[in-house]
Length: 394
Image (cartoon, rainbow, N blue to C red):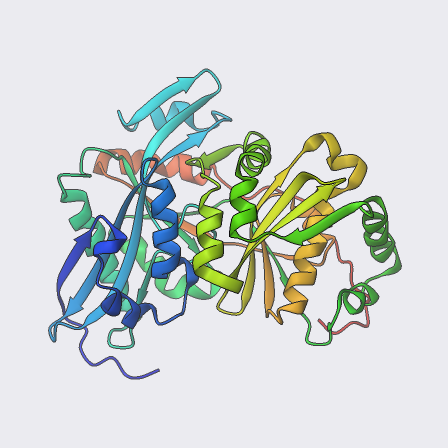
């Protein structure tokens, strides 16, 4: 990494449409480092979701008029079906919309991607330091809050999600009155360089866990799993949407409802870096999975299921093992399996990794009231499985 040459940022430009963003300037900072901040990903997402989400893109420039930081924001409705924090949050803002008896929504300005875990909100060039980048992203959010098109539409700003290795600079957000918290862990399986096939992976497991894996494969023997191209995704879009919403309905909370036609855009624009696999039983689509290859990591994204068949055919667990196969075949450094189902994922060898989020209420008084609410949020507890042999170097 080169030494930062000019940390003075003197200007920034806000865009509402990705098509208006000067791609050469954006790409000079993104530099193929994060697929979720690529023009192709953002344009694919925006084209199908602009009726559901407001998008904002910002380029910051130094005194030499050179782009040094890019950032992406999404204005979304956060829905909490559990009502765990409804009463407290309702006191903080009038931007709360009670929809039905068992759910509520609150408007949130998110720096990052609400449809992917990880540090997908902003990137900076070698021309500025990480300290300068944190200072600037705080200034960017302050300027966004003053924009006429957005200032009266939201209550809170959320930065999601930072890996432990980034704590030294992400915690600087607390200097700007953001409060940090953690939700459920991201389950990560590190891919061993000795695994050249799924058989190698299974051979490294203790007998009990290898037997469980073989049982899953046996129950799912009549399930055909294959990748779908853009045409096939569009042809099956209604069924894919149905399977996706089956899973979404069981989740505790969500940031907006994804239109699965965006998967066809990803397939077209991202090529081999995006894969949608369909699980078929006698020709009927009964499940699907999506994944992204991002900077050497395979990131499991969404799974859709027909619960009528899930237990008898172990569809969900079979799709998880398929993720492992994809990661090994793609020579990924790790497989990020995401949140939820921690016990099942730990039985695959995935390790829990805490990720930090940072939140700030627009009102100073309300931001103080956030403290007890944030402190009440914590990752779910589960018993960690250790499936690999004791002599396996991992």
